Image (cartoon, rainbow, N blue to C red; front, side):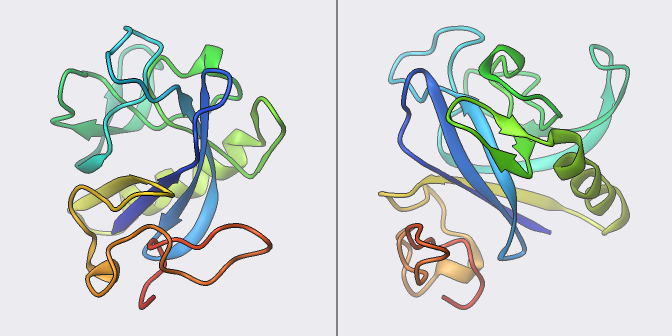
Length: 165
C-alpha cells in the first residue's frame, strides 16, 4: 500500500496535512513544525519516502505503524493524538481539524492500522509539501511530480497524491 502525506505550511509550530491511501483521501494529519535544524520532540521528520511497518510499541503498549530509516530520527510512529503536545515528531491522524488540532483521531487511526495489518506489504509513505515535489516520487505522480498536480478538492489546493493525476 502507498501512503502519501501532503503537508501544508507550518504555522505556530504545527504542520497540518492530508493523508492519502493508494491515492484516495483518508484523513487530516498533524505534525510538529518543519524545521531546518532538528529540535528533539519538536520537529517534523524530513520529507521523503519511508518504509512503514507495524510493530509493538513499548511506550503505547500496542501495535502501531512505525516509519523506518528516517534520517536523524528514531521511533517515528503514526498514532492517535490531537495536539502538538501529543506528537513528539510522530504523525497524528484525524477525521477533522480545528485551527490548532486534529479531531476524532482514533476514528481515523483504526481503519489505517487495520489496512496496514491486513493488506500484504511492503507499505511506503511519501511525505511532501504542497508547494514542492516529493523527494522520491510515488508511482501516481510520475508524469507530474509536483504536489500541486491534482485538481482542487473542496476549495483546497491540488496534490500529486491522487492516482492517475
